[in-house]
Image 1 (cartoon, rainbow, N blue to C red):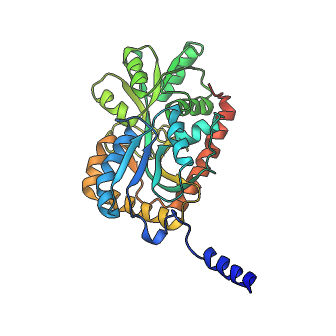
Image 2 (image 1 turned 180 degrees about the vertical axis):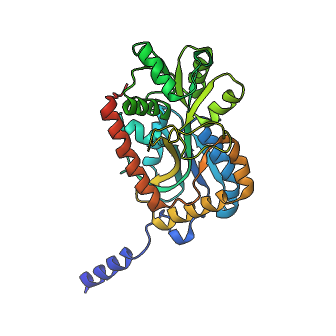
Length: 324
């Protein structure tokens, strides 16, 4: 009889929710922490701060934004990978997460295994820019310059494993161009060296490049977006110039710790997409020249992450990119 009672109690206990775990139906019932894997003032930081206030209104909970920059986004990713899978700790990061993984950098987490995808917010195109006195007008002009100098041309990258670095390596792989990479600690430093003429060219994130292009401090040769940017309609795309399927648009998305319930990730994704559909929010985001997604889901983002990682693994192999 005693044994039977213990079995009944054990079965009943197994049906009860575990203490401390969030029930999807009640989510959210406390503040949500968003770890931004990049420094304050960066493009990704600006984006999440623009959408955070309307998200608070939709989810009825405060959003606490914490910048945990470093190691090309790996520091912030490590924090979230080790957090509870309850929807109260999220990671906002970029495709650089896949790039450092593809490069073989040792990490305490695995991509994509350590995360549950939530959604992609936006695509960030890059702008191929050059030092104005070189007189370059197109990417083909850059290839001609490299041949004339026997490969003695230099490009800036905003950190090994960054989108700036990998886009330039992709361009070299696709064209067979010879050039030397000059790494810097971030986009501002890379741009300063570009303006000063200490490097010949580089692929810069659009939000950093376009103000300098408008001021005539650098020359824009092409953009990596699928279509011409509304913020810079005079700059042709790589596709227009003959570089088919160039594949250098970078996702900026939300990830949750592995094991976060789908009901929670879907609720977060729906809230973000609702915010992105708002005309006022679109107007605030427009100056940064991103291509907003607005239709991403946890499932579609999961497929995107895997495809993107495979793409950069191929570039790493072809370009023989090694970790620092």
